[in-house]
Length: 156
Image (cartoon, rainbow, N blue to C red; front, top):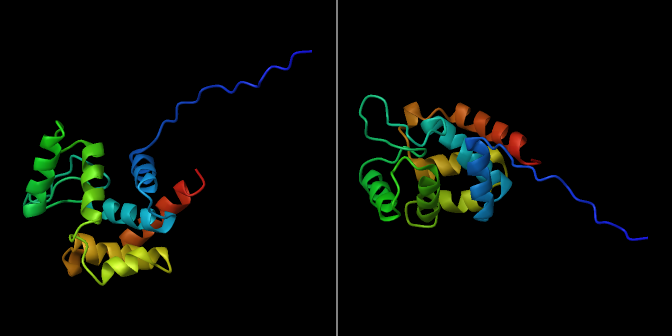
């Protein structure tokens, strides 16, 4: 008798913004720990909102809260891609470019690339890439959200 191959139903995954960012960073080669650390920081910066504008000053924009010269670089990059600066995918591509550039300060880059924990990676990304006001950094929240992102996505 003829054996028919099993067919599986096509499942279209309904992904959250966190899932989209996680998948993007993983596809770029970041480890689970690095990816969680970045996402934990992005929760503190913008709540993962690509259209977020910094409250008060209006200086920081997007998921990273790019500001000053980096803000204009993001806008120019997205415009060159035919997209608005609020486009999440465009911001992720720009983030990937910046993560490989001199925007990521040493010695934090080395610690981020070889972390021994999610907490260490979260701190390294924060101080080496985001560089917030230390008094307003919210490091406990960054770490908490990094751990939550890790557990929500690592086995997804």
